[in-house]
Image (cartoon, rainbow, N blue to C red; front, side):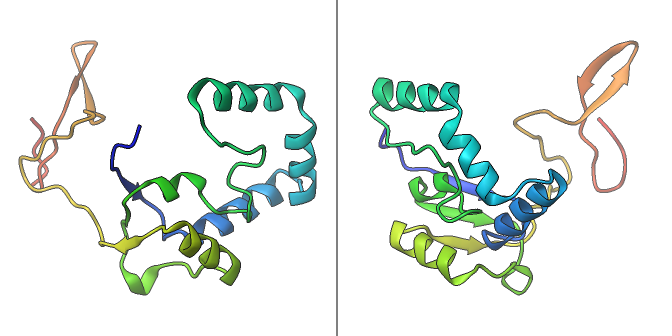
Length: 147
């Protein structure tokens, strides 16, 4: 669509994705090789990727976020990625992941915590409280009171 975007990464930075992926594979008793084989061999996946690429003129591969494993492919399309931690707490990237992000032009900026101010409203309205059997958006202020 050629619309500039800013990504928001709410983890300990791009290096954390590799660690998360490795933990997910371990918990699933799956290896990287097993996952690659499944993605390459599963015909419905192959067909879905082909349909998306053909219909929208995309260049999505069969191995999302796996070249190298733990690299988020979508971050290359953002003008910048804001990371909600500070530089000192970023998980380190492996050299191969850092190299790919650099080649793709991905830019990361550690901005620290994004905290609400008293009276702030959230666009998604995901704070809810029960009221008479119905749910309504609720805003909890720094002092603890809820609207």
